[in-house]
Length: 237
Image 1 (cartoon, rainbow, N blue to C red):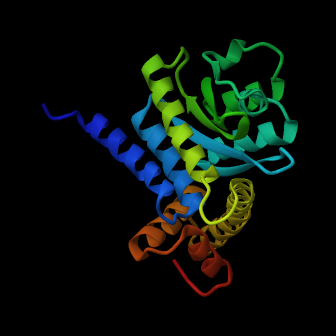
Image 2: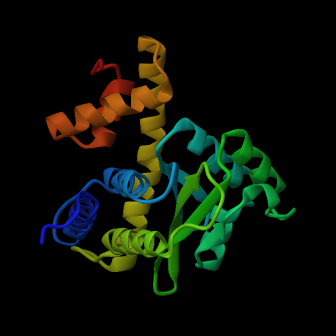
């Protein structure tokens, strides 16, 4: 019996993530695809992904909207929030109702509510004892997420983590640091490119990012490389 469209898309997502174990891949695009897939197929409104460097400092690497980016950056700056807590503890953190979440994360609570998010699920990107980041799914409705969706989110996050941490030609620890640092550095260039496109074309940052990704996919060029060309004014989108 044929599977549902959602089951098909989930299967394709798992296959795509699993391909990183045996083929070259763009870390930034991998993580953006992870966030996009999670938001599109699970019970969530928006998503973001934070990665930690070798010193445990978190950086925003992928998001589905500027509203999400604002909330994620707020958590990083204030060093508090469910996404930060998930990274520290290595545990899944769910907040079914941000408005009554208590006083532990006042800055996060105010910021999330101001952007229209009223519940959140934070899933650690974890391999054994190593937690390298968090996948964060924000919702515009209160209530706990369906356990099946949580399990799928954990599975997607686990495969992405394995892809990042997987050993290729050098020791696993060296590769992990290299891949993570590449992702962090790439995000800086991508944000610069978004700003250039937004200013030159008079569009939103979200539309600017979509232009970058569309060019990257249509021309089979790494997202970081497209962003670098835009920043250097060698490519106009």
